[in-house]
Structures are given as C-alpha cells and as structure tokens.
Length: 125
Image 1 (cartoon, rainbow, N blue to C red):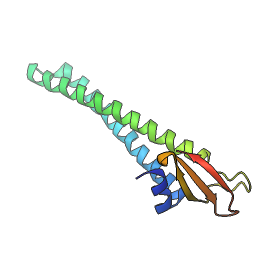
Image 2 (image 1 turned 120 degrees about the vertical axis):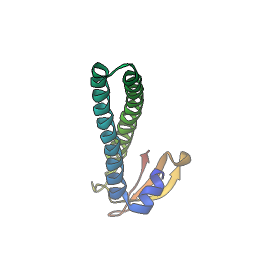
Image 3 (image 1 turned 135 degrees about the horizontal axis):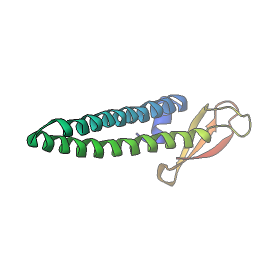
C-alpha cells in the first residue's frame, strides 16, 4: 500500500504507527538472525564435518537474511520519519491532522490539506 492509499484508508497517525510497527518487525528479524549467527558459529567448534557444512549454510543464510532485514528496517523507519517531519501545518502548527488532496509525481509527492485550518502543502514521500 502506498503513502497516499495508507493515509486515505487509515489516516496519517495510524499510517505512521503501522510504518513504525512494520519497521520494528524487521528489527526483530535482524535480532533473531544475529542469535542464529552466534549459534551457528558456536556450532562450528562443536560438530564434525557434516555439522560444519550445516553450520556454514546457517551462517550464510542468517547473514543474508539479517542484512536484508536490517536494510528494510532502516528504510521503513527513515521513510516514516521523513514523512512525519513534514506533517506539521505551517499555518496553525497542528501535527498529523491532514487529508490527501491530490497525488503528484506518480504518488511520490502528495498535496495534503490540514483538517484544522484547511491550509495546503506538499509532502515528499
């Protein structure tokens, strides 16, 4: 779901909350991969040849998944924060009470309107 669709369907504050929860789910996956890496490295010193091959596979898998999860966490967190920093009405200083007026540039830029004073401005998404 895109930025405009998410704000239209849930409202800005719920969209922001969902983005933060989604990003932190990626952080939990990164943490679990770190634990998996530690366990696989520990297993290298304990097992025989067959176990080492499995541990090397686990190290590779946990490493790749962990890096992808960390990148997704950082992307979603920074995207949510970037949009949230622009969600303050310049006229009345109300935060997060906005509605989508129009989409510009293929959905990357939104024209939004303050629900409190009807002032319009652009959000870069």
